[in-house]
View 1: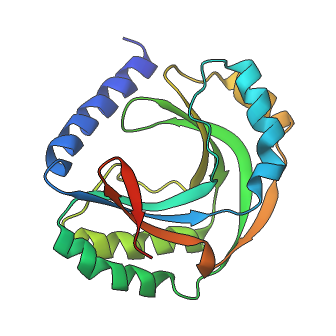
View 2 (view 1 turned 90 degrees about the horizontal axis):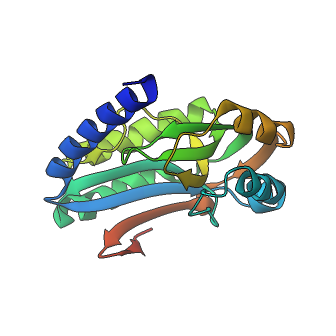
View 3 (view 1 turned 60 degrees about the horizontal axis):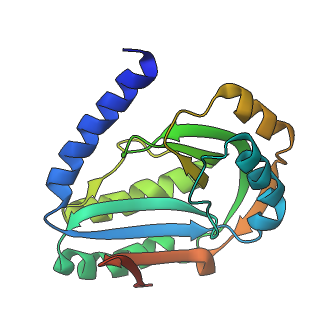
Length: 195
C-alpha cells in the first residue's frame, strides 16, 4: 500500500466512526462567506478544470467553514444558536486568500482549496466548536484548517497541477464582517438558515 492509500484507509476508518456517531442527530454549520472571490479565482477554476477534467462540484459561494457538527439534537441546536450568534457578533476579518493546495476530506475525496491562514479565524472556530461540543456535536476533522474549497476530485491531486495553478493564483486580501456569517441546519437534503 502506498502512502496515499494508507491515508485514505485511515480517513475511511475515521469517517465510518464519525458516521456511526453522527447518524443519531442533526447537522449544524457555521460559515463565513468571502465576498468577491469569484472575480479573482474564476481563471484559476477554469485552469483547474483544464488540468483535471474529473474535478467536480465547483464552489459557487466561496466560504470558510468555521464549524460543521453532526450528532446534535434539535434542542441543542436551538440552545446553541444564540451563543454562536453572540460569538460571531461584531467580528470582522481581512483574510489573505491563497495559495492553492489540497487535502483529503472525511469521505476520502481530494479537495482543491485556497488556504486561509488567520489566527482570529482559528480562535473563532474554537469558540464556536466549544459551544457546539457542549450540545454533543461530532466534528468531521479534529484539526481546523481554514480554507476556501474550490472543487472536489476522487483521485489525488498531483503537485505539478497545484504548482501550475499557483503560478496564476493571486494572493488576495478580502474584508469580511458579521453580515457575511451564516448559521445553518441540515433539513433533509437542504440547508435551512438559522442566523
